Length: 425
Image (tube, rainbow, N blue to C red; front, side):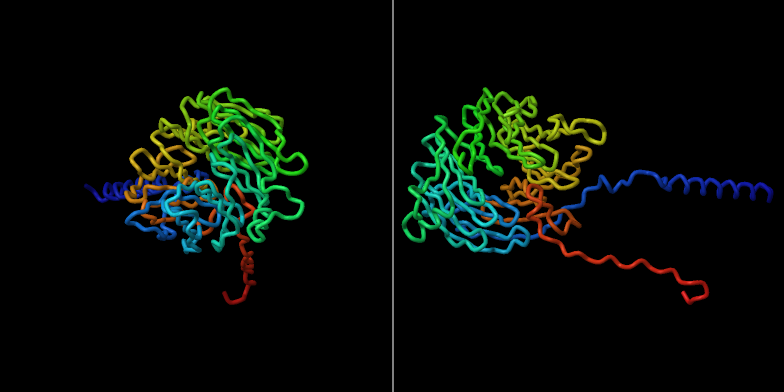
C-alpha cells in the first residue's frame, strides 16, 4: 500500500467515525423520554401497630390524608401519622373481641361501629368524645360530615344524628334543651342497605341491595327529604363512589355489569353509562378525570370521568390491564395494583404497560388509597410499611387538595448580571 492509499484509508475511517457519532446524538426536537420514566419506589417509613400477635390479627386498615388506622380483631385501634409513621395513640374501642366495622373519619373525628354501639374519638389524640347505643343493629358503616353522621340500620332505614347533640348527651347525660331525641331524622326505605353511604355538600346518597340509589337532603328544612331515586334495575355489587369536581357525581356498579354516572345535585339525570362486561365488587377509584375499575375477573380498566369512554394510551389503545385484584395507589405517572399472585405491579399511566413487579410476601393487606399518592402495605401481625416514589417529597392530595399543607414560598435566586467589558471575570 502506497503512502497516498494509507492517507485516503485513514481519512475514510475518520469520516465514518464522525458520521456515527453524529447519528448517535439525539435530535434537539426529540420527545423527552423522562416523561414516561416512573421513579423507583422507596420506603418512607415502617411502623408496628399495637396488638397481641399470639392471638390477634389485623381486622381492618384504613386511611385518610392525616392518619392510618389499624384495627385488630380484639378491638384495639392504633393511629399512625400517615406521613411519618409515628404512633399517635392507641385505644380499646368497644368490648374485647367484639366485631367492629372499618373506621371512618372526617377532618377531626374518627368513628368506629362495634357491636350495636358507635364510638367517636378525637382523630389526633384518641380521646373518646362520645359513645351511643344505636336503636337497632347497624347494617353498614357510617359516613361523617362536619356536623353530623349518617348510618344505615338493620330496620331498613338511614338515621342521622348531630355530633354536638351526642357530645352534649355524653357530657351531661341529657339531651340539649329543645332537642326531643338524639336522632335528628330517619329515612325509611323498605330495603336492606349493606353499603356505606356517601355524603356530598348538601346531600347523602346510598344504594340498596336491590339496586336503588336514594339521594336525600341532609341539612336545612328539607333534611331527611328524598330528592330523587335512581333505579338500576339490577342489584348493586359495589359501594357508591362520590366524585367532587366541577359538580358532584355518583358512580354505581350493578350486577348486570353496567356502570352508571349520576349527577348528585340534579334530579337523578344520568351523565353516562358504560357496559363493563364483568361484575365489579371492588370500590371504584377516581383520580383527577380518570376512573379506574377492578373487575371480579381481573380486568383493570380506565374510563374518562366526563365522557365515560375508555382512556387511551399514548399508543392509541384502550387502557386495560389483566390479572388485577386490588388497586393500591395512583401517582402522576403510575398506577400500583396487586395481582392474583400477591405481587405489587407498577403500571405506566401513559402507556398502560406493566413496568415492574415486586413481591412482599408478608405484607398481604394493602390499603386502597384514593386520597393521596402514598402506598400502604400491612401484614396480618400489624407491621405497616409506607412507600413513595423517589423524588416526591410531599404527598399529592387527590380528593381534597385544600387539605394539602401550605408550602413555604422560597425566593428565586436573582439572575446573574453579566460583567461589563473590561471587568475581571
